[in-house]
View 1 (cartoon, rainbow, N blue to C red):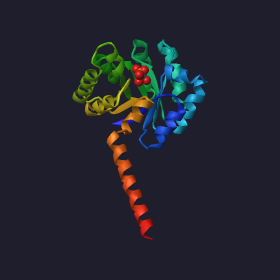
View 2: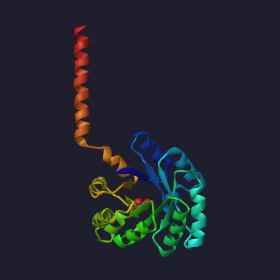
View 3: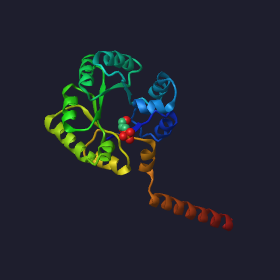
View 4: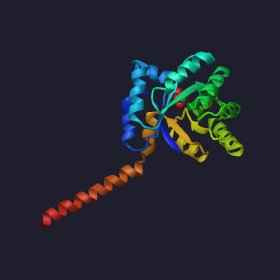
Length: 220
Ligand code: G3P
């Protein structure tokens, strides 16, 4: 399962990229707006920093306008993936972009039925939102499991990207469910690496090592 960051913050992206585990980035209009800068500058920096798939989202709501915007976004870099919403207009636009050999990510997916539609237009990525479904007392992980099973049974090529992840266990369970990609905010990524026994173990190793150094110095 590929690990993506769900952010438009370049410092967060640089930090996780430094770890060698970052395969891509997803952005959305809210995340880009949070940066308070010209979106073109924000996207350019991200596209140049991470060589993997970078999702850039359209904001037009009508298919023709969305298609024109999608063409522009796709031309920004070879690693740009155009995000379109799971609406009738988004599907019509997405189908045209796929016809132009442009990689698309169908976003705001909340049901297996919607995920089938995304696969049927030949989307490169489908993004089911787990956390937001949990927020309304539904089962986000259950939805993901059904989608991965349908895709397996039907032989769909579309990559399943588990989105709106809120905790390390969301990431672990997404991997177990067969997601191709998991995207998460910086704080969830940072929690993946942490374990108190790792910290304690390292502290003891270093203390024992220092004791040996002191003993050897004393003997000399
Ligand atoms: O970028 C899409 C998705 O991951 C948003 O997550 O936490 O705003 O529901 P969240």
